[in-house]
Figure 1 (cartoon, rainbow, N blue to C red):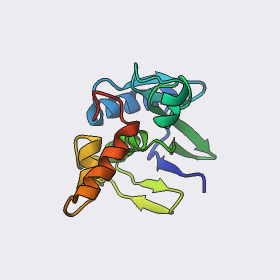
Figure 2 (cartoon, one colour):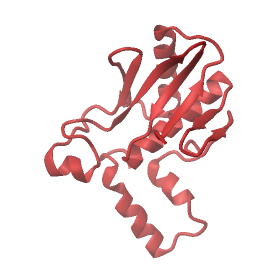
Figure 3 (cartoon, one colour):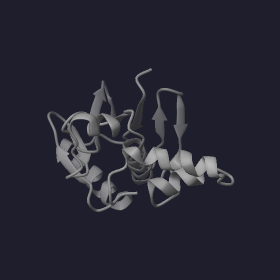
Amino acid sequence: MANYGYITTPRRLTEQEAEALITTAVGACLDPRWVVQAWDGPRWFVFLPGTEKTGRAAVDAVLADGDPVGFMVSLWTDGDVQHIAFPHGPNRFERWAQGRLEEQLADELGVGVLYDATDEIKPPGTCWYRADTTYREHMEHRFAKLSDDDKAYIDRQMYCVPEGHR
C-alpha cells in the first residue's frame, strides 16, 4: 500500500480552485503560521516556515535535511475522476496536521476520505484529528486515563513537534 489519503472531488476543480480551497481549509483547521506554497504541477507544499533542521536535528525530528515541517497535497486526475491526494509520511506531527486538513476538506466538499492502507473511508464530519486543538491534546485524548508511563510516552513523541506548536 502507498499510504495515501484520497478525497474524490464531487466536481472537477481547476488548479486555481484547488489551491484556493486548500488555502481556505488550512486557515480553518491549522495554526495561522502554516503556509500553502504552489509546487510543480498541481501540487502544494503545506508547511511551517522557520522549522527547518539540518544534520542530526533533522534526523531526530524525522525531517529531510534542510526541510521545514510540512507535507504535500496534490490534485490528481484518473480518467474522469479527480482526487485530492495526501501522501502520508513518517513524522507524526505532520501526519496530525495533514489529518486535520483531510477532515476539513472532506467537510467542505461533502465527501469522505479514503485511506488506501486500510481501504477505510472516513465520512464528512469525522473529527479524529480535529477533536483536539494541539498535537499534545490529540495524543493525550487517545488514552482513557493517563498513567505516568503514558505521559512519558507522549513527552517522547514531542520530538517531532517544533517549538511553539506543542
